[in-house]
Image (cartoon, rainbow, N blue to C red; front, side, top):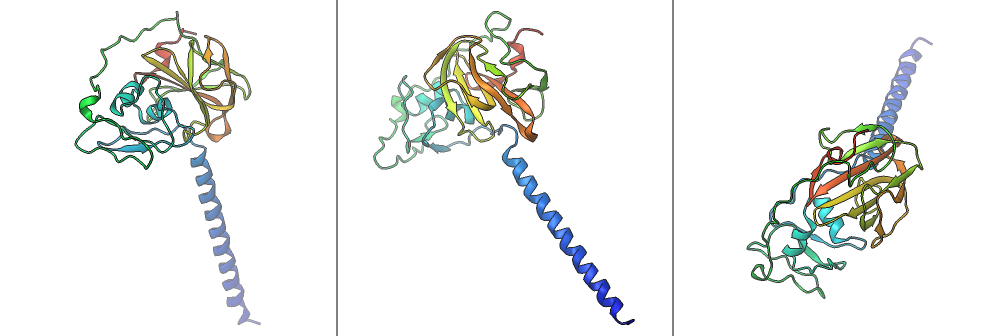
Length: 251
């Protein structure tokens, strides 16, 4: 009977090892799930010469938003008219025309040469602050500030299903879920300077092309990272993320 002890110890050691591997695998899988529901993706500026092929559901505004660009400059660099119409399969340059011109997919007209495209920077426009034209997009406490490392906007804590409203009147230029990390997203163009974006929604109440008034419901608040009810709110000034709190009325 004495020689059986090492065998029992060996079996116990093997069982412990298997359990450790199982726990490690579960933790890894949980990590992957967390990343897939993570905070809004922060993308650096495109590298020189980088291009993008338009996918179904994209708009010029959503592509510019994803890459931190001014949609007007993006249109100019690619010879796109002021109707800002793009087509699936179209290849867009994400910077001013240079020595290399991106090849157009079959059946898609190439962008005009750089000599035919206006690439000058827009005249500086001062940021208008104050309470007259902006309002908070939903009720709740500030859960994440613009100053937080890696943030391009703010997060507002609330209750799942509460209304999200347009912080200012404008035109809905994107309503969809194609931008990774934003969930159900609405982007509103307010004028030639400002866009605002509303992410982590559980349901969108407006479609692309709609004109909305200030305070009009546009979505229902959903779950952000870690299944917390949050609204992710961004404001872009000619493509540049700015702190929305500077535009919002004091609470």
